[in-house]
Length: 114
Length: 115
Image (cartoon, rainbow over all chains, first blue to last red; front, side, top):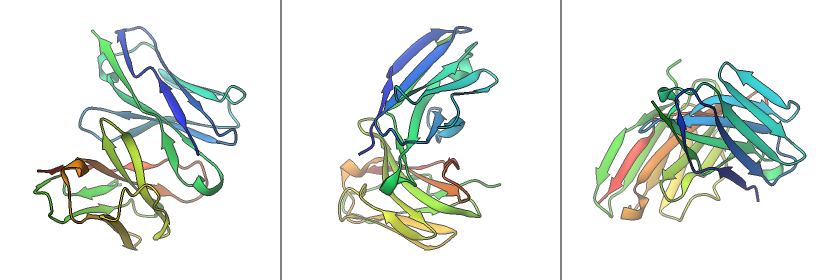
């Protein structure tokens, strides 16, 4: 079945520095890769997503890159701010029988130190 | 847009009691998902519906769990009888139709504590 590995599980950066979170997946036919941000006690919220026909997507300080050959995708946050502190989840949409559902990574606790 | 609405926000009950969680998806969305989130296991998909029909319930932990979607605007997740290990945050999410790359939108969750 589908498997998504997310690293690191925790990440601390100084305010203003960049943060990178990486996920690898096993299904080479996966075609949709969203990233969710979950603040403490709140719901996961979509922050950016990428389709398999695109290698990179950027939205202000957030970017996602996709390497289909290596089967990994990464979230990049530049100029980090304290409000970026949260748990970030990657996910991928499989194909075949699981085509309608997402498989989530285990999450990365990002702490931005002031 | 009111978003996905879940109720109750918090539920505390004794083991053995029946628990019913409720979800109202975003109007017009045709897929609905129930997740359970714990520190140990992260976000787990329990079941999802497409056009009110259960498509995959392989994530439902055991027969004590059941879910229904009687119409496009309402779904329930029921646990009977409840056990302490069922304590978790339960999220409902919905997704619009129109293509495979539509994102899921989560509700605020129900924090369930079984004593």
